Length: 139
Image 1 (spheres, rainbow, N blue to C red):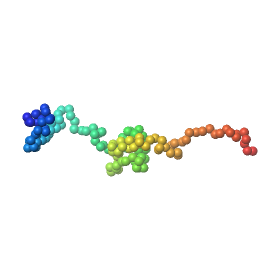
Image 2 (image 1 turned 120 degrees about the horizontal axis):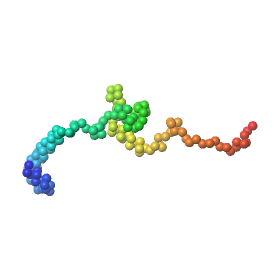
Image 3 (image 1 turned 180 degrees about the vertical axis):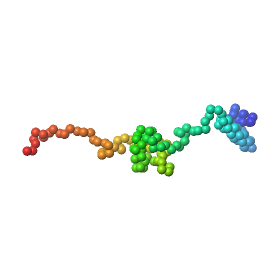
Image 4 (image 1 turned 90 degrees about the vertical axis):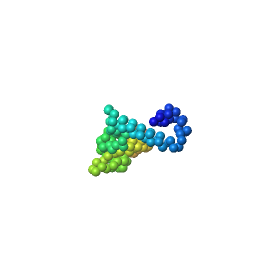
């Protein structure tokens, strides 16, 4: 333990360690690391549950719709058209949070105007009919 203490105080001493001393030092470090991990995991006030953003969690269609601020029917439509990656768990459809984030980034890269098509909810601006030739009507 004194060798580890010396190395912590002066890390440059690692270069002068004899090769036969490296393995015992590593063994002591691993033992110390294991004891620290046990102490942290059993300390009061710590939880073992990880945050959802740390995990590659599966989102329901309703959760996905909430994130995207869309109706669930629209999310089902995106999944059905294979525009949004999803997995099927039995009869349920789930979207991996990582896939959702990648899909959102891909939408940002494509741009908004490229996805607009006439007849699919986009109408060109209305124009007034021309008044030229009104007084020259064919009779």
